[in-house]
Image (cartoon, rainbow, N blue to C red):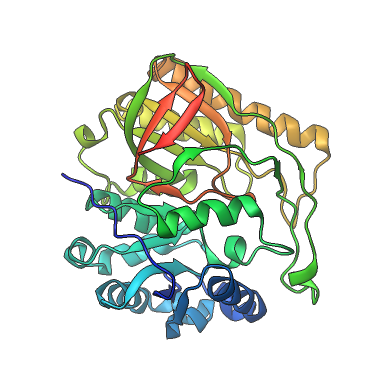
Length: 349
């Protein structure tokens, strides 16, 4: 199947705001307003908020069909040039049965979201439509404090350019949590820290392929349901992208998911692996820096162990800036990427 990258935007374009996952925007309208203002003021876009984006969890959970209808409406509208998810959640898998793949194929539109929105992105991948794992409104566009320059630069490329081009590492990063209930949310800068360089391991050959994957928990759901996975041979030569969510899964859980991919004969099909910088703390868990570093190290070792068993020739890169930390790159799911261990570079083409 040929892949289609939806056409880039220009200043003044209308973009849709939908809630295909949960109702976080209803709980944090001030964060939604901050994100909408940034779309207008920083990117020159005209956001159109769908009614579902202001609904709460109770309504959205009870009406997965309404969430799917909002996606259809946004994709079908010829004046809408991009679609932004407000936030992730825990059940978007239930929405996919109500989505019409033909609508997604026939009306390709740039879609931005991450975490639970990986569900929709994997469906779009199956239909040959490139989407963007990142640029989610509440936790990335509406990040507390100043919008990170790194996030703005790559979101601007994802919106207005044909490709992201060369991928760089962010100089500083954070997984510090600023509560939505904080009345000074928009002015409160989280604690940033120096970002370690990427870690390269595995194979040494240059690889070109299309990105498949996203949030590891959602990839696990798709392995379990086996309803929306592409034909296995379509994964041959592609590039697997994985990152872990704010529930801080143990290294053993990460290892087990990759083991299952290996036992299904899927892990060996990828020619390279990209791993997002893992979140190491959340609103409930505030471990010491020593424990945070141990968490990152154990996750890295778990991934390397399964790749050594099932796919030792694949180059793997750790600590990329996509996923649940800030700042982030909207990673093109379905986009073509060149991973070169020799020059230690990553480039989207």
